[in-house]
Image (cartoon, rainbow, N blue to C red; front, side, top):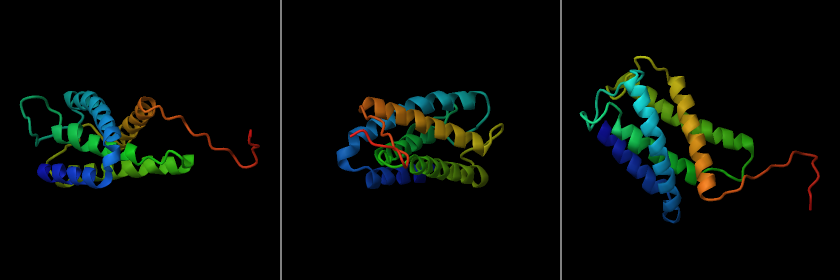
Amino acid sequence: MLAASWIFSILLYLIFVPKNHTREAHVSFLFKQVMTWLFGLIVVEYGLIKYPVRIFKKSNKASFTFEYFVYPILCSIFNVHYPEKRKPLIKGLYYFFHTSIIVGFEYYAVKFTDLIRYPKWRWYWSFITIWGTYYLSRLYYRWFFKIEPIVHKQKGEASNG
C-alpha cells in the first residue's frame, strides 16, 4: 500500500502539474513539508496517531510517505490549480474538496489497512489540520509569488473607474 501511495502521488504530480508551473509546485511542496514535519512529529510523539508501517522505522515515528511526500504533492497540486479569480464560495468549495479527498483516503487507511491508527485522534482533527495547513500554504504561496488578493464586488456596489 505504501508503494501504491508513492506511485499514485507521482502520477498525480505528473498529470496535474504543468511543466510551466513546476517552480510554484516545488515551493508549495517544500513549504508543506515544513508544516507536516512539525505537526506530524507532534501528533505521533503524543500518541495521537500511530503509523505501524513505516519506511524509516528507526528515525522517528512519523510516516515519511504521508507527511513528507503524499501530502506535499497534493498541496502542490492544490496551489497550482487554486481558483484565485473565482468567488469566495468556489474557493471554499475548493478547500473542502481537496481536504475531503485526503481525509477520505486517510479514513479508508485507518479502517482497512495497518498504515494509520487513531489511538487518540478523530477524522475531523485531520480535516481541520489539513485545511489549516492548506490555508497557511496558500498564504505563503501568495506572499512568495507576490499575488495580490482579488476583491469581489457585491451586487449593487459602484465601481471606482
